[in-house]
Image (tube, rainbow over all chains, first blue to last red; front, top):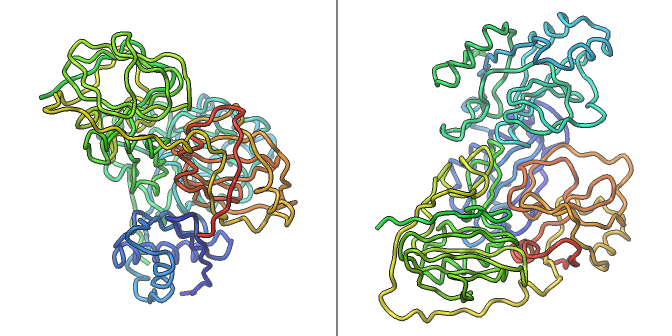
Length: 244
Length: 287
């Protein structure tokens, strides 16, 4: 397992920013998540919460309880080799998506600009699994890596003011699902009946950084049925725990 | 004893807030909480409330509230001409209200955000360990007409004499104490200097998520891009147009613009009381 060179930066008076090399890489994500888990289980005194992104971990602390220099020193001298197997996630969530043109309002345009059929586009989108790097932007918005290059597509020239909850979209080299109604500039290819954020659940998101997502296509009829089950709290998202 | 307050008119942007929602950033949940922590803390302190008690944040145009029970209140922060049954109401000290009293507000004389605390704190819906309103997390994003807000009823047993002097710098000082942000170094040498020499002004696009500043006299380094990373309330982002955005309490959890400064708590509180076109000046402090 690679050990990366880390950079430490003060981020105001009550946060420490730890940075890994600026790359989108699964090994880097795993190293970040490993440090996060150690920090939370071993030196939680004074730590309020930790937040990861592609190549960073931000540690929010209470300056009355911990001093930044000490915290930095403790982290630098941690032995991080042990926890590798414990925290690496092998979970893949199977997410239903309806790619019907009533939902996938940009499918036609995307199919023309990418010069691939709508069927092939959907097949490609469902074929791959996507790694969850982190959740940010909106409550429950997953930053996913692994969109095949054939599906990369620039954001729309002007963002739409209103995108539906559940919209499945492609923006640049990323794909994602809008967890709530919001403005947005990505190309909409479908909609998922699943809720990606539920403030009444603990935790509020079923997925976490390090898990994977795979989409599968459902009909309009299936979509309606699944949505009803979701609203009643009866839908169980299929998951697959791979054994390496 | 359970009491309540009825909302006759909600005012412009009125919400219930506490110190914020912690432990859920990893799910993309903003911290939220009172914009001006200092005034909110004072409002709770004067009633001997817990520091984490929920208060009402009132912005420029206040609500009209009818109290259905005897209650001790304190109003701090911006002077929005508070009145009880039409007569001027003291600020920065406990005031005893009786069942049936009408609390209303008039013109904004000073500052932007006032805080109303009630003895024991507002007993509204608590979601993910916080009372702070946020669209999609709490049922309401703002107080609305017809809402009935639960409180404890209370009557003071002795004289109400605790008064605090408000901190004049909260409203008058242009200075925003800050430290260098993680990407401060990407600024050109002359911009690193002018950032602290120049004054900036608050743009019309300012709300609980962020304040955009009007000027665009800083240059964005050519072809610079960074991977999306964490942002915090008080993070000052440089946008490609050269304009600055100061993120506030409801800001998203991650962002992709360089973080060139990080405001102190004092600075966030001060900025929360600034209006469109008000001037500010960044003042760097070595942490």
